[in-house]
Amino acid sequence: MCGIMGYTGGGAAAKIVYDGLKRLEYRGYDSAGISVLCGNEIKTVKRLGRVSALGGLLGKMHGGTGIGHTRWATHGKPSDENAHPHNAGVFSIVHNGIIENYSQLKAEYFSDENFLSDTDSEVIAKLLDKFYDGDLTSALARVCGLLRGSYAIAVMCAKSDGFAVAKRGSSVVIGYGENENFAASDLPALAGLCKNVAVLNDGDIALLTANGVAIFDENLQGVIREIVPNPATPADLELNGNPHYMLKEIREVPAAIERTRLSYAYVESSVKKAMEGVDRVIITGCGTAYNSGLAAKRYIESFARIPAEAEIAGEFRYKNPVITPNTAVIAVSQSGETADTVEAAELALSLGAKVIAVTNSPYSRLTRCADVVVPVEAGCEICVAATKSYSGQVTALYMIARTLAGSSVQSSAEIIAPFPALCAQITESEDIDGLADMCARSYGTYFLGRDIDYAVAQEGSLKLKEISYVPSEGYPAGELKHGTLALIDIRTVSVFIITGKSLAGKCANAVEQVLSRKGKAAVITNVAEVAERFKGRAYVVEIPSCDEWLSPLVSSVVLQLLAYKTALLLDRDPDKPRNLAKSVTVE
Ligand code: AGP
Image 1 (tube, rainbow, N blue to C red):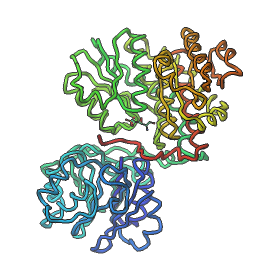
Image 2 (image 1 turned 90 degrees about the vertical axis):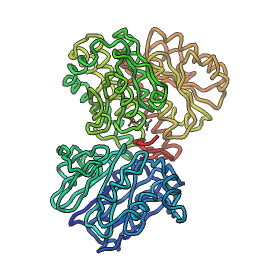
Image 3 (image 1 turned 90 degrees about the horizontal axis):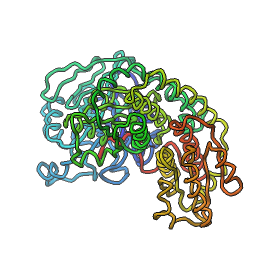
Image 4 (image 1 turned 45 degrees about the vertical axis):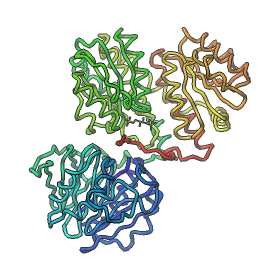
């Protein structure tokens, strides 16, 4: 959701910031721009399109301090004018977040002035210019005091060395180098650049020069933030021979499951303690994270017999939820930065719930507010579509549910142990090219399943629509006849996931209903009788038999590959789908 990057030191700032922005491009790719302090003049380039559009424009930008931005448009269409940085007087700024009161600020302070962009961000540069009396930090503190909403801002001033950053809501990581320092929205930008990093708190302002970093709170009192080793490595960013990050990350599903299952042992006792006396569980998240919550609901209710609900975080936070002291809220988020999910977790905490974070990002906002953090060990995920992080989330949530049911961590880990190999089998062998072709040509694709297979159906549908733009819906197979069946005709494809023996017959009825309306059907199954029954009549994908509850780990890989292959057939970029960004840090 926009990426910002800043550098100050003896290196070529333009190139360092440019490379950092390329690594942050998964956060938004509508437009990009860079400002560099060249002597005591600020030079700025910005362009509609991807970061690479700046590549040929940096030749004359010589200087050791620079800031840059890659944008996911919120206010103002993607264009050269709306691209960041925004400049005013001696200032250049980049901003990630949303300034909710920007129109009021414009009306109050600049009613007679023209703005060059339609963004909510330009007013920050104008305000800095207005309040500047020779001290960058105090001007920035004064401006931040006026802003409502969320922001990570990097500011360069033609009259000061280095640059400053400020944050509230949106994240900023400081990178400590030798005679050079960095700031970025996320750790991948800093991989290989510095050994140590610190995460800023809300309200912090940091002043970075080549020689050091000074951090202040909102009252400009000096504060110390924990400095930790930089966990991001250049290897995280390699494609390792894969054509896209999505395929690379699907191939990393087995490792994500394996690491997550093993690391759970270190947090099991904290989960147990936090869950003592809990009589209701709410699992919340957005998109894929919410879909993993659908599986978790079934796990918790079936294993522990505790009522559980899966709630979309953006709904949960505004519905005045019923929370008692015995309610536990499990907030699931790959990035740990999704605004809706973090706000939902904070709301639950304020209402007295115990909050457990399930996240792939150890230094995120979510980890800093939760009572307990259960790590998803998927490793750095760059493709906008979540793949291995879903597998890690399902693994972690399964283990939490078993803890709630009183099972030992060893027994849970043993049940999961075969799954990395089963998933590896899928990623290397499953032939779904024909099905991808059917989906690519379809008018609409429906994903259907019952019980735990329904949870996977939702995720399969999200994946397909997100990266191929084929209209798609996930649905409980039993509900088909109550409405969706009206949409079925020869132009549609219905993909059934059938992994549980007990409901296989019922689900097979729904397949028949589709076939008898001339709809095309596919069946992804590990039930031999189902495979036999539909061979020749539907596209059958046989997957290995496995523990019924954990079948989402296997079937989701087939669906991820299906989405990937369909996207390629339609000539889409699977790593950077249109209109989207990976970390949605705004509402
Ligand atoms: C998944 O493929 C999507 N890109 C999206 O739905 C994502 O899962 C959602 O935005 C939540 O992100 P988070 O896990 O980082 O909170």
